[in-house]
Image 1 (spheres, rainbow, N blue to C red):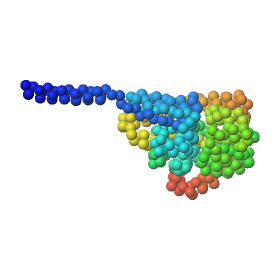
Image 2 (image 1 turned 180 degrees about the vertical axis):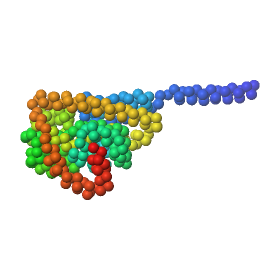
Image 3 (image 1 turned 60 degrees about the horizontal axis):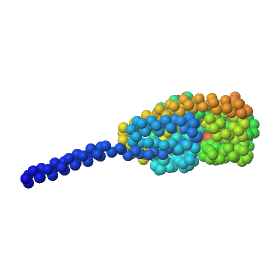
Image 4 (image 1 turned 30 degrees about the horizontal axis):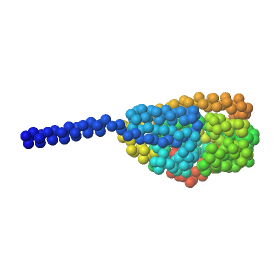
Length: 333
């Protein structure tokens, strides 16, 4: 009787252990809730691509990672969002490389005026070895660049008159992103550069605090800037890539399998964003033209480029370690 009792207790313990293991296996894996920053409104090409990224990540990780995109910069302006992502307070974001320069000096090369000759050249170069070098520089600052978005060619627009030559910029108060290179660009053309948050530009244009700004067609249209600044001049002085970046802490917490899934989703999002971007450029151009905006070509871009040479010379003097990167980009075109 005693032997039978000991066997019964042992058997019960085994059954309990097996049942516990099966119950643990049945419990759902706790999902990682990722917060993502986006400066653009819903429906914008970047916003649509980021939503696709979020959905694909949730699907391909079987719900282990559930990203959520917060549009319209509701989580802060871009400089704040960069710091939040670096610290891990935000998990991912779509950043323009313009304001990235103060944090990752190598990305300032991308902000040199006229560094890229065309949007296609920019995509090709950023998808290759040079893009990887820049991704490595971002990683050193705790930002993992998974893919490169486009933001088109940026041009000058203002409330005063068409800009056809550098002389037409003289005296114009123009908003620029927070980067010394953009301040120098406008100053070298004879204008007065005014760094300002993107969300403040419309009112500043309307009230005359500034005379103009610079941006691409979709941003010029979606922001409503075309309503108050009716002259859009195709200087195409900046062709800036953007990254879909993940916080290093969030990235490192992923398994190798989930890292592959997240990277693949980011690359798919970049392909979608580029296609949607070009479609949006055409629609935005049509809309601003219909509103009465006067768009003009700039026939002699070499005159503008000549004004930029002092910027290049000073940049290389101050950053000799980046001279090879500048030359490699130029040589690749």
